[in-house]
Structure formats: C-alpha cells, structure tokens
Length: 276
Image 1 (spheres, one colour):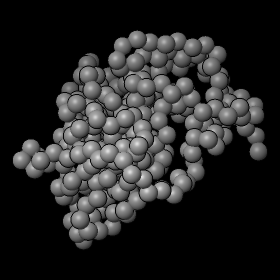
Image 2: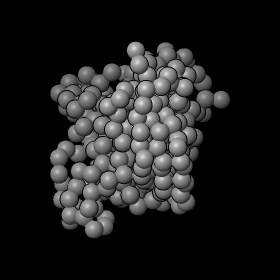
Image 3: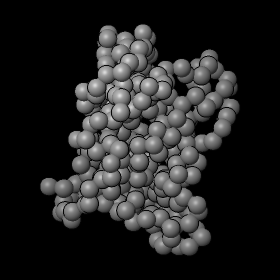
C-alpha cells in the first residue's frame, strides 16, 4: 500500500495573539485525496498548537512517500487516534463540582435521539476530559482550537468563561465526530451560541479550520453543531461551571443522566475527578 505525504508553507494566527510561519513543512496523509482543511488539522495536531485561530496554506504538494510517523497522523500509534481507547482503571483523586445550581439555569445534558435511557455509561461516567480554553477570544470554536488534542473517547469541554460568541462551528463538530469524541460540553448557555454569527463583513472563512455555515448578517445556513453531534450519537452538556479548576488533560468527567426512556433533555450534576 502506497503512503502519501504533503509539503506546504503555512501562516498561523493564534486567538490569544501572535503568529507563526513555516516553509516546506511535511505531514503524513491518510491518502492522496486529502484536502487543505484536513492537511491544516494534521499540521496543527503534529505540533500541538493550542488556541490556533486560522491557518493559511500555500504551495501545497501531495506526493507518494513512506510515512514518518507524524504526531496525530495515520501512522502514529502512540497517539491512539484511529484505534479504540484502552479500558479505564478505577482511580482515586480530588472531586471538582462542575454543575450550576438549578436557579442559575442549571447544567443540562441533551441525549442523542431524545432518549436518555439509551445513552451508554461509557460516554458519561469517568470519561477522560480535554479542556479547550477559548475564554478571552471573540470567535467561534473551530477545528484549529481542537486539532492539537487527541479527542478519541474523550469528553471535550469548552471553557469559554461563560461569555457569548464561543459556539462550536459545524465543521468542528463534524471533525469531533470523525475523531471519535465521546461527549462535548461547554460552560456557555448554548453549544451553538454565536457559531453562526458573522462578526465582520459577512464573508465565509476560507482558512479550512473554521466552520463557514453562515452568510452575511449572521443568518443560519444548514444544521447546528449540536445537531451534528447528537445525530452521530454524541451527548451534549451545557451550562457547566468551574472548568478553570481542571487541567487541560488528565481529569475524568462525569455527567450521568437518570435513565429516563423517551426523555431527551434533563438537568444533571456534573463533576470531575482529578487523579493524584
């Protein structure tokens, strides 16, 4: 079987300020038909670049060459991407409350298919967590904010600081599904809050790392990110609290709902266990 790689120049801008340029960078590809969006995500993952806002690729060239083991790429066995996660061992550790009181809107879980009874415990109990910090930025959460993390069989928790405008883009939701995410949560009031707002001249983003499901004036086009996730069997948790107390990785997240048949949305008590 022939392996393929890509060579390219890239200009990266970060949501917390600063930028980076590279020339002649190479990554392993899953096949010769990989598009610029996929190449950009592999590039961000290979370097572990956090808070990536935009990536612009130029001089892209795809060619046959044996894989070198790009981090997060198709031949990286160490990352666990593309393979089933290991069994979870029982651990002790400090518990951190992550739920809001019901009087403050309350932390809620929405179940795929509108049926809480069908949600597997493996998606909601002691799930390894990835905390993606986007507080202080003013853009929706795109693939660039996520690609540095190994999210397979993980709960991806968006730490927005509770402010608006940090909704998950449709493209990012699709990427999470492809990567095998277990659950997606946010401390914002809605996972889709601001994800379809234009915030500028109405033009769609063309950097390949941010969902463009919007038109001038912020009108919605196509499905919401939550619909993409729920349609793929991924539970959604909203209005979390205390995410600033969690490390970026290493915590175990629990948001187990009651087993109610035919009920799709319910308040829950969410918490995390920090081993150690």
